[in-house]
Amino acid sequence: MQNYDLAIPTLPSRSVASTTEFYRRLGFEGGAHPFNSDYAIFRRGAVELHFFTHMDLQPAESSSGCYIRVQDVDTFYKACSALGLPRTGIPRMDRLEDKPWGLREFAIVDPDGNLLRIGQVI
Image (cartoon, rainbow, N blue to C red; front, side, top):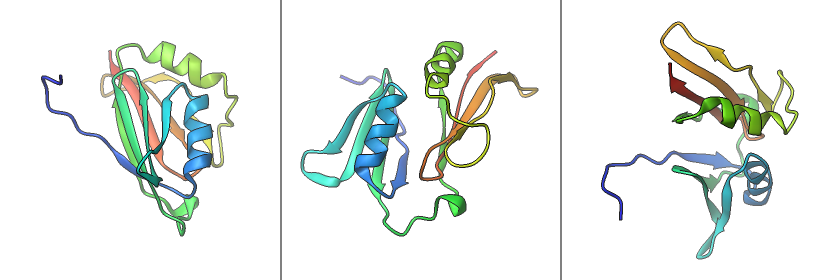
């Protein structure tokens, strides 16, 4: 039972199968919803992301994204680094940095152009 309010991002995906492959490599569990194969749900610990099929999505033009606040950003970064994503292009992953606004964070752009900023309070 959940004892707190929760916001769950719903992001576009050109292909639930491709999105499933990418997010499982990031350590998420889940995939296509059993009642709607055009919708997917993924979880990694307490983090939950939903995806809907958007066949006409242009990744380079996407403005979709979310912020994921985690307890241990260094461990999350290390796990994501194992994918060997490039620093430029789509998909990509930025370096982990301490930001002047008091967060230690990095960013991932997934194959559909969704921007995920992942960080923790310093």
